[in-house]
Image: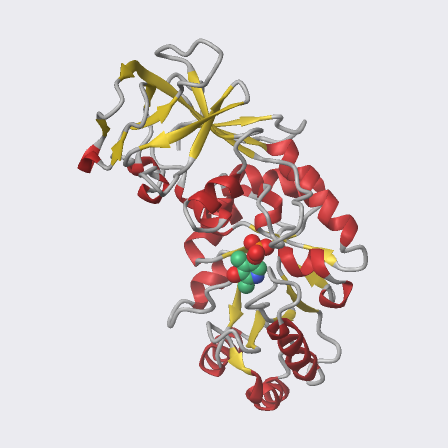
Length: 377
Ligand SMILES: *Cc1c(COP(=O)(O)O)cnc(C)c1O
């Protein structure tokens, strides 16, 4: 990813805002360790710079999804950083994990067996965590196998660094699934009375102290996204994105805009064509068709709705009602102070996570408010 000046617009990531968000969450989770989830290149913001920023802020525990993400993050962080790999252990890769000082979050008895064999072969208890499935039905050891897991560990004398699980519905605080999973997790933990436990993502961290245990694992909230549905989002915005206007034109009532002639103008309309399309991760679902309003961008705090379909590299917006001059080269705010990640997500009928992880197609990324002493190179 190119870092530099933004000739034709681009994405800016406010590293100090990420550090502030981490500290705010760390304060909420006062008695627990606050880790940081940096999977998918830190939700599209750049795991290297974000990892170093959060290390400087005090974070020592990091989560990535894949071993490759772990290798990259390991190279960016001091030796004291602990890196967990959420995908678990892929068959035959134990030596790679250990060699890069990555900890697999072991997600089945087979994975545990393979890791224990490896540790015995090397006569060294390489650290790892255990993931229990408390009802999500994604990866994880089934909760009924907690006792068998305990027995496996007792046979080898191995103790995991941490026992974790993951909520399916933490973003909906009153959902009964959360209470149910919490109960199952507590019964799993009776087999691991002396092992640190962790179940909270951002939403669970922000919802109840009961979910904090010994470690919390926020992701989305670090990056300024909304974690809990139906509540005001207290986090600082982190990511902004601006793209240039390519052309401004006057079109007449009755004409159509864009592919499929999907939007017919209901008045004489001033259009700005912006250099942004689905190839940049600006989803086609954000197109505005009749009866189906799409996404919005902004200029100087004024909103401009999208008209017609999003094409690969260009999209039209309605600037008729904008009372400031708009000309080619002016930058439109796609994300920022006026258009928040979750506004875009709602318009595309998705979640902020998907917006963040897809909206980084071909644009240069620039870091701003880099904390002193953090090397983003
Ligand atoms: C992604 C993820 C998190 C972080 O979730 P957020 O909702 O982004 O805070 C925590 N734990 C696991 C297992 C995850 O996959």
